[in-house]
Length: 224
Image (cartoon, rainbow, N blue to C red; front, side, top):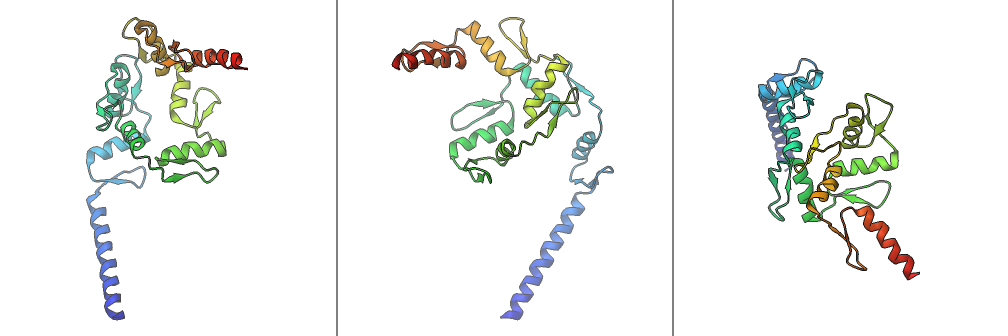
């Protein structure tokens, strides 16, 4: 019995080793700069650009440049407001596949990634990583123009527009442009007259949440 088990374990080990060697041979396209290898030559070409500062793909709308065509295509969706990735549960659409993946986890309510410092848990590992930085005060994303640093890349990108004067978010009703998408949303409501924030006390509605907060305090003071 023991002899057969050893033979099985040996065969299993050799099988896994052979499979591993086959996979390595399939990844025949190797990067000359680092140790990474790839199945496809096109994937290697895109990877090599990560070692270079060359950005040959330029946006016609805002002149922002990118290392890969795929990055440019993703960026252009900011201007066109194209959202090709749709949730099959609630039909909300997203610009990027990753955003859809994160969103769909809100329907499952699974939160397997737990914080070591507090009781919070998250559905995505990347969300846990970002949250952990609130405890460690780590800010790995540094601005190349000044000494500012940030916990997440999106905050760095937003900050850099102060230096570059880039305003990629355009209003479809007028000629105004904005550095942040949230500012565009608030501005657009001046055209559409949309007021999504409703007071629980008097049903008065507001275009921005901050205005509702200030208004609600009036009711709270009256109650006192």
